[in-house]
Image (cartoon, rainbow, N blue to C red; front, side, top):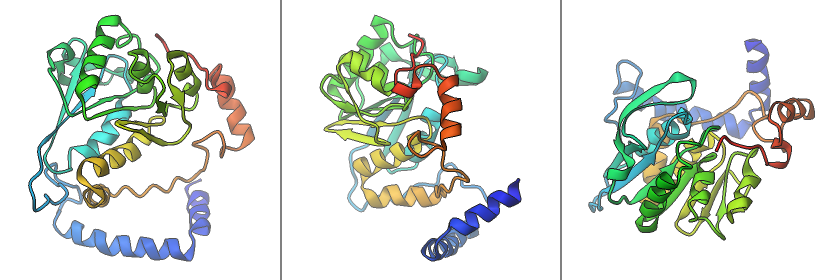
Length: 271
């Protein structure tokens, strides 16, 4: 199987693509030379600008049953851009059990957070922990004063339910996209959506692209691209089935059956 995939990738790479990869390998060698183990140190960051900028307080509002990759992906980017303090808060604080039984923490308590520069709400299938009036109130309170209000995947449904996305365009996982209409938001199928100070990423893996996009907003395109190279984010999936518009019909139909309502973007999360 791996041989077939390798051959497919090789055939699909254009001459320009192969040239680009050769240049990346040359650049990557310079990084590898400084990291004996082949792994990036946690301290690896983009270069700090000559003119010091105000530190950015970035908050991920996570919750029980949340999806790890929704915030782990963008955190890998944001934790490496200059002068950025990444924090994690949850409804009860402490350790949080995510999907698949993954335990993350410790976290701060959401009600204890006074204000932040950027708030990001990641998604999940089960949103019930954040859909309580008290939690939606904290999301709304922090969003009102934040420089940027952001989300990944179905996290935009939580933002919409808090009332702050009325009349605003927003991304969401394709299977749930049109649920946003129920809260007055405008569904946008793009992978990354920016509407004023509101920015959102589509489903799960879009969180990495979102991380780069918000990093560029906060610290410029050069800093974002430096981090992209540091973490070697150079996606080349073996298949093109990550979007209903591109997935083979047979694959698409199987997934539609597994996710009731998804064909119309109306799959119901657990609220």
